[in-house]
Image (tube, rainbow, N blue to C red):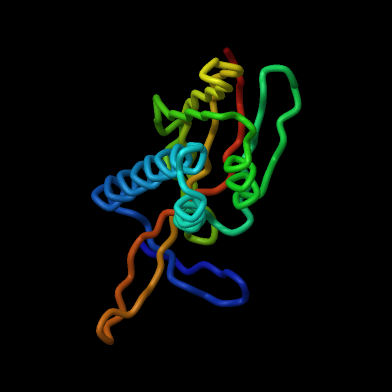
Length: 182
């Protein structure tokens, strides 16, 4: 049952998600995560032309909520560094390996979507990322990183041919490193 919530000085109607909508939203979230995985592979691939990598970076940035960061770790350091998403992509393009291979696997929700007081929903998806960096066809570095991705779901409105259409939108948030292993 809808209620009234206050946000940023305005009142709006809170809407809960029915089970069919939740299935669609879960599917949309997983699709965006698969897109991001594909984009990271293209951006990190040293054979991708610079102009194409920049085009893919622009597409990838559209997947994220403003202010999101991504954690980066290595096996030889305990410290996890946090980078703004755009900076992360720029650093990924500039890695000094001749060849970079990045794959995501075992993608799964670890927390169901929960409604926040402002009417939005938040959840967490876990992925495993396999990273390999080669120099002169020799593997120089590899690791597997477990990462948690925050998912934000909110009701949005847009106009199509003069009609207001409301829909649930999914944005990715922070990507946090929870474990780095060989």
